[in-house]
Length: 438
Image (cartoon, rainbow, N blue to C red; front, side, top):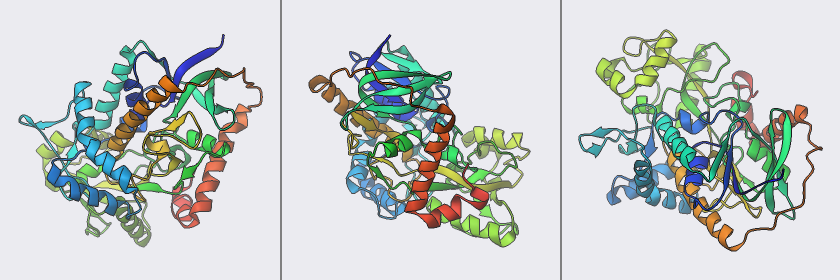
């Protein structure tokens, strides 16, 4: 039986779920993800979500974002993100998301490259708090169908218009038609040996876009996070949130000496750590939070404390070995301020998209905010399109041409080659040797 939806959204991170929740319930929506519904980068976010504290904070917040992005940001996107932040926070609170408070007011913390404390948080599991409650709301909507373990294989296109998706599940393929398709497929960390991302997030949406000649932007703009917990295993690297350094933790070399301003932008801190590792021929440096005190560590970082303890490190007593790891993707499918791509009826939001808001290096805790702001704008735009310009149902498409055994590797190779073509110096520094791509 032929399946048809008004909208297909690929991805169950904050962007995909928030987009679905902002589309009128009159429209049928299919949301798929290649793993379990909870396993997104958004779910893993620890530090928090940035927000404009007051009108007086606008200039400083704007400058902080541009400075972190090496002034390569799209200033229009930055302005929209910052000015929309309080509306988004209100939306989240209305949906049941809880942020930590100091008395009756929100409690703000500071992270690297922010000139003031403007980060809202829920302990050290802000992403889990936001994403789990967005997911719960989506599960309550009768017009939203959620399908885990369904993988996007390709887009169905005709004359530079998207009219559906080819999807695989349990080794079977099917064509699913839609008036509009939204790609919210997340980052590219699964391509890297050292990454804080889930391994199934391998840039599929971007690779498929490249194959269709859809415009992309800054594919080489990949953020390395300075402080992932060093382990000898091959599993996903556990992130030690930047908020720990924002609260005053120190980075130490093997001689127990501080060697960098811990609140510099992430790229500069990562390079300083890498230089220390080379000098000492060590795969890690130390992060020290001991001087913060037991009460503060337990209160603000219970999840991080517990995870470190599982690896044999007590944050209240021990130095924590940390190493840089791939963390966030600033590049992606090129979109406008409403998430529209160069292909008609195809949108992209969240980490797989690029509107230039982050520039060359993302400011801490702007990721959740950016995803939500532009997911909502995309939802408004596509709803207007559905009202006025719905495409006709296409003819049946063939799914016989896909070789699932080689397709995954083909996508990975295509994306990695494009990254290397755009910035071979970055590729050689972070994508080979000890940070070898998978």
